[in-house]
Length: 257
Image (cartoon, rainbow, N blue to C red; front, side, top):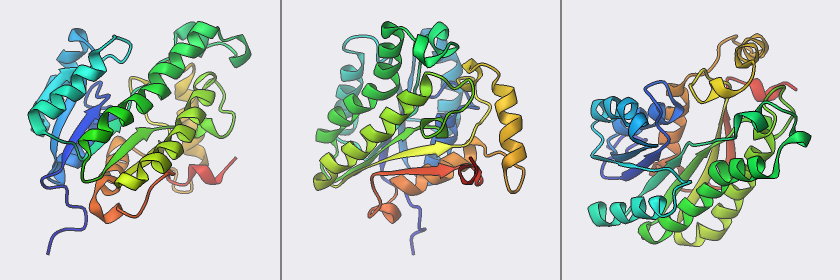
């Protein structure tokens, strides 16, 4: 009998590994442990040095650059998927960006350019990936993105990323509805605060971690492995009747205002 979470033979594209401590790395590790074939991206040559050790450790089959701000680079990535694999079974979008001056200021003070860039990289790129993945998922598939509870309530210092993540969650629901007829599912995973390099860009993030830990029923924050376990389940056939959800993996933090 096959294990419940069995990804053997499935082909997955992981976008957003920054280093071994990133959420995307935790998800990639879970995918690999469940038998998936993986490809991964790196932002640029500088980031490649941090990504390759993770990719090599996990047996990632191939890597490619992916900066969604660079014209044509995302399209080239999906063309590489088609050329190498002929199809795709799941995708993880784990990227976000906002200019520091806009992220650290009040939302009402954010510039149009900064807001637009944050929305483009953190949200619209997921829609672009969904469109490019659609013709590759001929037998269905699963699209995952990563959000945060600052989308639903005001989290001090999360600022501009709150509205952006709210848009990402809404986009996920529309993707699930529009592509569901082709057997393509979509989910937004909402982890509790985790000390990643990306999160360090949020002002006073250490204080946010301390407050979150104090609220939790068990007093323990989640880690990237917890997120990876959920991600592996969602892309597996065990979750084939689940779609269009925003799923918290936060040790119960969403229970508290």
